[in-house]
Length: 320
Image (cartoon, rainbow, N blue to C red; front, side, top):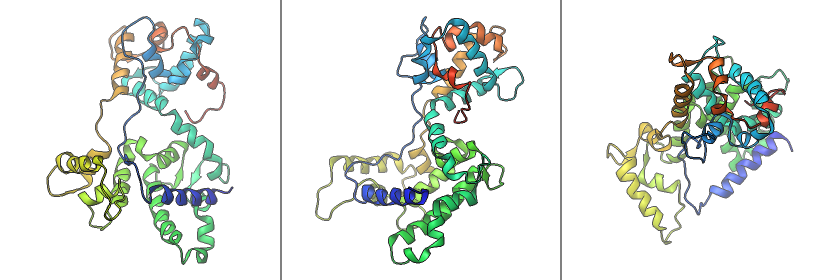
C-alpha cells in the first residue's frame, strides 16, 4: 500500500472514529512516567536504572557482567556528552533521560523514514514529504473536486507545510531525523508547542473567531444528538471550562489558556532525576560529572544487570 493510500485511510478512519465520539476525547499532553517504581535510595536503584536506560532495557540488564556493563556505560556517556568537553552536565543528562523515555517516538520515525526519504540521502525535504503524502492528490485534483476529501487535503497540505517549517530549525526546507521527529510528534518538543496550540485552536474553533467558547469545547469531546441526554461527565466538563479553562472569565479560551489546558506545567521528573544522579555521583561537587565519576558510581546508573540497549550501541540505531 502506498503512502498516499495510507494517508487516505487515516483521514477516512479519523472521520469515522471522531465523527460522533462516544467517549471523552483527551487533548492534554503529559510527559510519560520515568518508572513505575518508587524513587528510593536503596541498593537496587531500580528507578534510576529505568529512568536512565528505559524500562524495557533496564529489565534485561542481568545478562552482562559488571565489567561489560561499565564498558557499555562508557559508550553511553560519550553520547550524553553532546559538546564533547569531557563533562556531563545536568542539562545534558536531562536531555538524555527525556530522549530515552520517548524512545517509542524515535522508533516510530525510524519505521516510516524510508517511505519519505525518496532519494535516500538520510534527509527528508519538504518536496519529498509532499510528493510521498500528497502526490496523488496533486496529480489528480479532478478526482477530489466533488468530495469532502478535496476540502480536507486542501486544508491539510498548508497545515503540514507550516508545521514542517516550524520543525526545520535551520530553515533549509530539509529535515534531519530530529527535525522530522519534531514534525511528526510536535507535542514532544518545546519549540513546537506553539504549533500544537495553534492546530488545537483551529480544530476546535468552528466559528473561526480565533477563540474556543464553551460550546466548541464541549463539541470537541461530545457530539450531542438533538433531544438526547448529555452524559454526566459533560456537565462536569462545562464546570471545568468555566472554573479552570476560561481563566480570565470572558467566556472563551485564547491561545494562552489553550496552552495551559493541553500543555500543563507538570512536575519535571527528568530534571529531578538528572539532578539526583549528578548529586549522588559528583565527587568534587562542581555540578558536573566526568566519565570517571559516572563509572565509579556505575551501579546507580546501570547496576550489575545487562541491557539489550548495550547491544544496540553496536548497530546503527539512529532513532536514539
